[in-house]
Amino acid sequence: MLTTTSTENADLVRELGADDVLDYQLVDYRDTVRDLDIVLDTLGGDATFSAFDVIRSGGAVISLFGPVDDNAAKRLGLNPLMRQVLWFRGRDLRRKAKAKNARYTFVPMNLDYTHLATIRELVESGMVRPVVDAACFEYSNAMEALAYQGRGRAKGAIIVDFAG
Image (cartoon, rainbow, N blue to C red; front, side, top):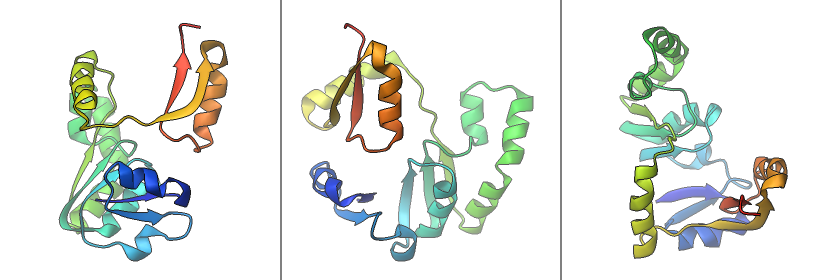
């Protein structure tokens, strides 16, 4: 598994299971990486489109923040008019995927409490290791927590304490 991160986080992502790490501050992955089977896009925007430049023919791009594809729109229960609008907006992405004979999937991040039990089992078994940033915010400082997250320097999940 290959991932991008900053130099300061390279050891952490290796501990989490990355085999190869590229420092995005020093190297543009689009210049060095080719023929990947799957790209997990966690950025959206231009990164979603450039993911098709580094996958192999027949590969797949899975995005957490890219355009909503029709299958995701159906799973989200969007009405036909909204699905048509999203279909039209996704035409450039579909062209990019078709040129690579690739698949594109948008995975919406839905809060589903039934998944919490599965996540708990994975954490308790050691298969998943949660990473939590050292910063913790009181509920009254929730906006500060959002600003901290927005600066992109958090290492893992940010805790907002509702118990006070």
